[in-house]
Image (tube, rainbow, N blue to C red; front, side, top):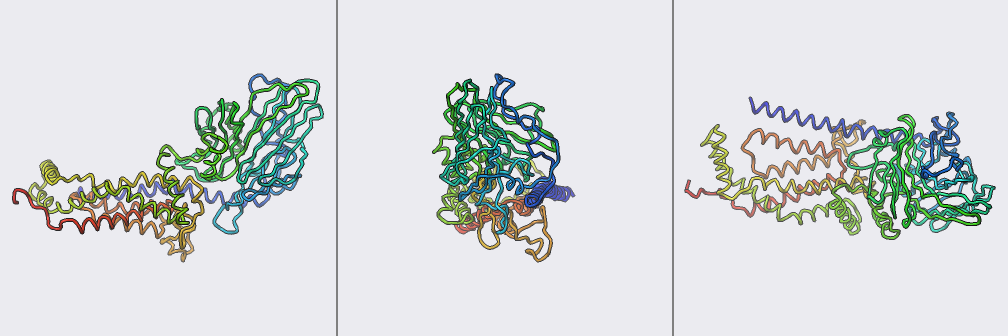
Length: 599
């Protein structure tokens, strides 16, 4: 009765795990997928939103220190007309004269009015695997559903400077990779502003701003850059990955979640200073928008939130200290903006080429980066050799098995010895019956006598958990395996298996969710796990035997929700473990061990 009670408890706990996993993981994931689909639908239609034609409600400039005079150029602060309008991304882009951005990796435009970088699409990345899927839209103009843009400008104390309504003139109406465009604006009172924008072959813009004082009076200027994002990204957010504002300053990388910013006071700001080098930005799972001031100059940084849950705006700013600009003088500042995909090799390149410290940590490698980063670089190397990330994962599995072979071999030998000891264990059980104390003492003496460590048999499974987690992290946070195909029906190694047994591989018009979304590869993984466990010595405890029988079932349902690349890794690891155990068993003695006392 007690055994049956414990067995039913084990079954109950299994169901709790599966249902909890569905509720806390799969349900939010499905909701996020649906939200993204709705969001993409909205992008192509006119949609009523709350907004204004001039600027975001509550939009404000950086602080610029405490010595700013009240007569400075702060005309954008708190600018709103409070009206509700109907607006679409396409309508806003077509509504004014724009400089066209056209490079192999990004498309977009810059409006002459305001001169903000607010229209960027990533040409190499689709939203879904569908060949007709639109490209990923990263930056969007002010007033759209996904308002998200970058503004470089000047704080001016003592005169009027450019704002969002200023109409600039351009010397070229197309910006391509390797070319530049220079914008100019004259305030009509002696200050002439110029902004030269260049673009490299990837996602890095260089912005050189210059102000010339032709008046007969001095002014104070402070150059700044800011990222403004209205609302939060539509997608799943997990503890394993940071999404939201972050910066890299003197104290290193610091991350700010959207929830953290929500908990701050109405007028509070996160502020910090960088004496030399660093950056500030907003990161998504695969995309990054980052402001990179001159790496040889000090600057101030701010990250904060304004508004409420119905209309919230997030800011990531940097600004330099005030500088006196005398009559007849000029002042120039150079900065950069990265707006694109967080490709590891590309971020590493910018760290080396431009000296942007810790820029490659815009990818959330986690606290075990000493393991996740080497695994990624090894996968990249294997991909270069094989041309397929799925094959690279299989080769990685073989390498891990070879590296761990000595320890795993010792564990498998211990398990084989345990199997040979089964007759003696049964004899001890018959001898001592229900006397558990004497049974345990006799068992430990037998282990000691035969030099068997029962714990070492678990090493092969425990050793692969760190690698498994690191690979999970790599598959989840790096863009390199996004939409990476394997063979057959596997079109995306970073997503769960889509060949579902529970809807007869698509024959039934039903899309299972949660633990019912059971693919064929997770079932194969569970079978190989069960087969490997059958080769292990059985426990003398009937309850433990029953629980162990449920382990492959639990892992099958759990891994069905993970990326198929992980399932491939685990399945191949099981198969190699089975082969290793089989070879050892063939070499092992087949005659039961004899007692030294002749029994």
